[in-house]
Length: 528
Image (cartoon, rainbow, N blue to C red; front, side, top):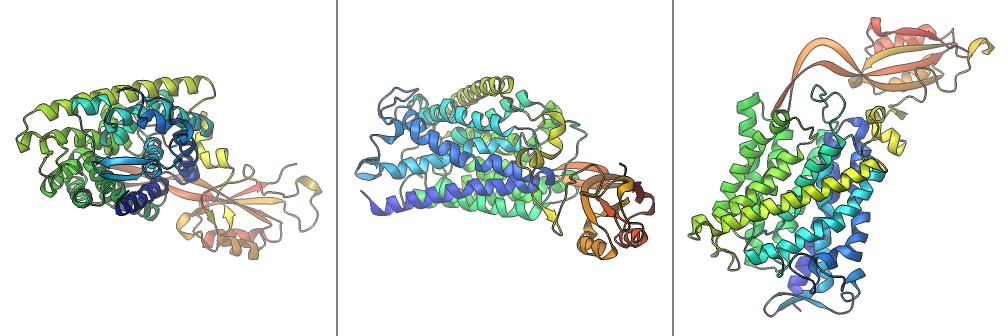
């Protein structure tokens, strides 16, 4: 057993695990504020669900020493033959503990289906999504992993290559995303629906964690701490940086702006695209692959308007297209001088054979993942339901978790009743000093800090806040991943304050002081 290689694989397993909460932050920052917790929960739950399915059946289906070129057997069910002292052979004379290999591969299985949640943001029922995770992690992922990553796998035997998951992870998740989108459909109001990210700094933190974790994702796949791991690491970083720059350039030329969302989107696209190539190409090739990825994936964002599919966070453009073009470009750039186990691509004098093998693998993985994912999603949708019912999409956090991702000055951003002071006495039974009216007004969200304390000091008996969108007539331009949007609505906060007769004017004055426009202030009688 090689101690250095074992330590390296264990560290890389931790890095890949760290990518899952990173993905939760990345996606969570880009969805509307009403769906933040739901999105994060959909990304975190695979840590529990797929850990169990992988230990029980996923690993043995993918990497069982028995079985055939398509499907493994159950000789390693629940790791029965693995948790005793066993070793995984990396190459001649080099071994690591089998459990280290199990752990490392498990992290890939966990993050793969989590990727597709960005496409279906705002639409998935939690129970249906959990069942889909179980089915995908048993029926789809292990088979694709076996085909390409097991020495017996039929695509590996054919000659197809996938260093760290361009096909196994990104293409299979992307094809599954397309299938699930066909089942759950578009969001209400799409394509006129224009939602904006709720927290770009949160998105940036998530993207940074993903980039950091990608070093373990790509550099650890050779299972050795050697020169190929170093090459894979530098290729990963170079491709991510190059793709960031070309995405920003395309964004500037097409929309007139270079945005933070564009920068991190380009980086993630480059990281996804280099994934199948990282340990098989030289640094110059990684640079070219990254430059191409940023440009192609940026333009691919527009496919959803052309083909009319509602991919909320552009998973198809970034991960699916990235994984596909990276796997295809490997047929051009692969170089046995970098990694002796690799075939030579077209530009290294190997002819078109590897390119053909990559094409066959792309078609087979995409079709297999799409068909099985569609069948599973359709069955779930017809039974327990996969799509959240229409009205409940307005605030999935409240529906599924009973809470909000953010609170303002300690007051929740969602009312407990429809425009009425919570717990306020009603009708003529209210005695002197008891609330008889509700003052309602719309205020600017940028001035919300301190509003609660000011209203309470002015005599408000109860306060409720509710998000609202107001037509302003002022058209503003917003760029989201090269998609130029013309918006004439702005986000505001509707305030409801229950007051008695004595303090009514003081409360109204506070609301005006916090930017309430006169025409938005209303006095509502508390009815019996």
